[in-house]
Image (cartoon, rainbow, N blue to C red; front, top):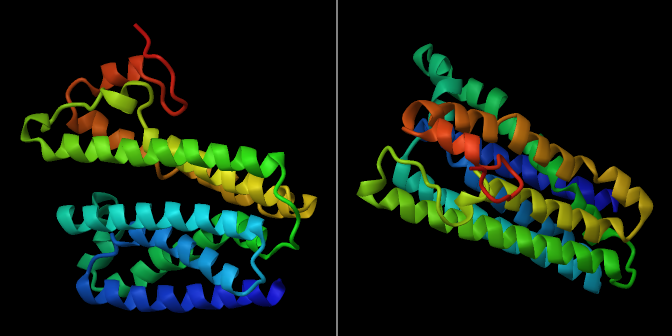
Length: 260
């Protein structure tokens, strides 16, 4: 297992280095959001081909690859349509003006993202590479949680894309569909996906449950407390009329009927 994990790390580092060179050339790192999902899908696939696939390994690989490919392609398509993300423009704006965009992109975006991507994907990697054991109730519960999260994320993204594509929605707040019950159905779905993958991996061995807990725990933290929800809502509160009222009546993460 150790050799496979080292191969995964080396492959990820090489891919990130090439993508960093591309970002430095085009002057935009925003496509890294799409790389997040596709990178985890690639790590799962690479782990799967390095082992004798068991039903559990195939289940975990399938869940990770389906999630990662869908999310990655969705975010890359959004990047191609919308251009540079304002978050990265703020992070790297000073470095761009001072002529050190490439080094700042490596230090502030690609190197941290590579490390965090690898750690977040540990449940999938360890679960796939673990010794084969029968699929039990914990893994089935994980698959059910994954399916719930995948549906929330995919449906929420589709509803948001339709809303943004409608010129009449400019400056307004999306408060219908899943967005009526949570301000971030895609983030909630993302967390459910990875807690589901973690459950499926944890059933293989107690040490895997502990060693890979950092993956879903960090992802949930960053979505709710760090770079996800807080940064997004800070911008929306300034650009969307009525967003404060939406916040007052709508759950911030876990879906719940809106307050009066």
